[in-house]
Amino acid sequence: MRTNPHQERTRVAVVGAGPAGLLLSHLLSLSGIDSVVIDVRTRADIEATMRAGILEQGTIDLMTGTGVGARLLSEGRRHEGVAIRSRGESRRIDFPSLTGRAVHLYPQHEVLKDLVAARLDDGADLRFGVGDVSVHGVTTDTPVVRFTEADGTRVELACAVVAGCDGSQGVCRTAVPRQARTDYFHAYPHGWFGILTEAPPSSDELVYAHSDRGFALISSRTPTVQRMYFQCDPAEDAAAWSDERIWAELRARVNGNGFELQEGPVIQRGVIPMRSYVVDPMSHGRLYLAGDAAHTVPPTGAKGLNLAVADVAVLCQALERFFHQGSSELLDSYGRTASDRVWRAQHFSWWMTSMLHTAPDADAFGRRRQLGEIDQLTGSRAGSAYLAEAYTGWPFALTNPDSVISDTVRRSAERAP
Ligand code: PHB
Image (cartoon, rainbow, N blue to C red; front, top):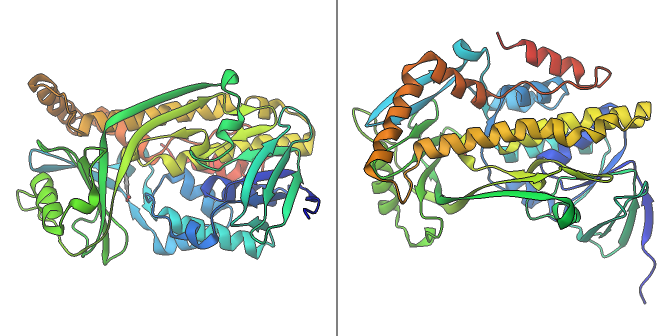
């Protein structure tokens, strides 16, 4: 016999325990706003998912300013520039001198571990491994999120607001009816072949390489594990590549003029698709989408995690205004405010991708033009400053001066010259 669902209540039902959901729940708790976070994945799965690792200055400032940045500062690595490599020559773009800002290399799953630990320390209500998630009544004042707990208990979670933070494959994006939304989608004709290798670092800073054979990126994880990527066909079968073939391809795209990759055994490999997506609007009734649930960027600009953080900074301020002052004004403008940054990031990610990748249909003119663009970027202060500004990240929007994060956001914005 089926028992009735367990009735529960919270102010903000957060669907998804990724960077957006966990950080939102953390920031709301600092302002005394209760939430319940649910995720279909287990805690172990969430903490093991390998994603990119570049944190913008604003992300670093927000995490350290709200008490979840200690390990990021001690174990992450501050990067003050990147190398753009073309025709066998690296040219460095220096962030602090161009923007007063820098980035940190600190993998996303480490951010997630820190956020989960901080939330559990605070006694937060996090439920992993749930199933059958569905969202109801978002155009009423009393939305409900239904799900089944890992032990089989059915739950009806009543709330005032649903935060849809469950990524591109989650249920929240599609809870915005098709006739109420516009989907902006762009598929790139490339994939990224990504590897982890047991080897020492090849470079102190990231290397974004353009070559006749296509793009490559040299990044790092730890002193003994390195992350590298090279442009491939999105349908490429990663399992069909031997270690030797992978290294030959990377060498051909990156080595030269004294630069040599440090090679080692390939311990993980996979092909990542490249696409851009934005949903407009980013909300429907009392459902607010944040992070990958609302938008996807290709990995070239390292913007995915940072956009999730920026969305949540805007949403947190709007929810504080709503719950503490009874005004929905900032919730009503949430999508417009957040999407300003989303579209800048879409442009930046698309631009980095198109400048550095070889298009399958590129003609001789297109290839030569790309070199002109790279020369203009690396050879001019104005060109370099655009990349440095976008890469280290624009200041977060400050919409609510009474917010718990307003001082942090203000100080972070003042950092830029
Ligand atoms: C990574 O370290 O995985 C990484 C870094 C920068 C990117 C993309 C991925 O643009």
